[in-house]
Length: 329
Image (cartoon, rainbow, N blue to C red; front, side, top):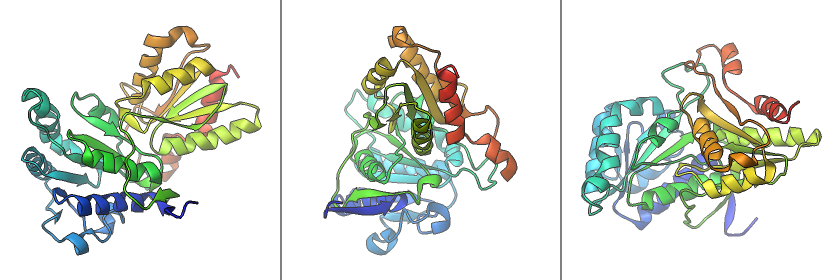
């Protein structure tokens, strides 16, 4: 481990990114409900209120539309706000300022005005939270022109992509998953950025390409280790950014392996897995040795029962079965 880095949990990697950006740029501020409460945002906002005060760390009433509208307005006049939604489900109240305003502004003003806002949504899966508190809506936001959507899977990327999102001159939807908050990894102490739109090879292989984002990358890596024991050599691609997608990395991997399994923590119909499958089928169909497999949530709302949750959420075993299916066994 480098002297300039050390291991941090995913949540504190986000926290460090925000600390460093707020220190470097006085235009950066954090706004949202519960930004001083671990019950809302875990420890991702630890120490921010104490260091920067309530004028730059704004703990708001519960009004997602107003909070997001205020952040978008502040970005239009030159600030760099981070607006956090502790439960991504309730970002739906803020669709008007996100889609009608932030996403369209740069285009509508001929590129002469920008909206450098980070719209930070936290996915809260499991724990019997049921249908209105467990939704992963990344595909919805990826559908909108003018929005970039990132989903880091490692502490290193959690910090680097947050910094890139804050520095971007146009709106970025930054999505994390509470299931990753305790995951530890090596994180440099200094500020650094991870480019938006560039994926990463987490494991090289020759038999099957596994494409995933966010916590499904972790499950895909677990599956790849199990499959290794069966003599199957899996390549794991971490999208990191679901919009824009890194087509070059994706296509090169599929050309090599000839088989593709797309793993997504969202629903199947019109999801990111469908988009990745379509891109491959449209562009490099001739390289495929087998149909593309998708591992996703079923097209039903999240259950409230812990027994049903075990069946609802795909895991490494689900992925192993999909890979064996695409291999014909």
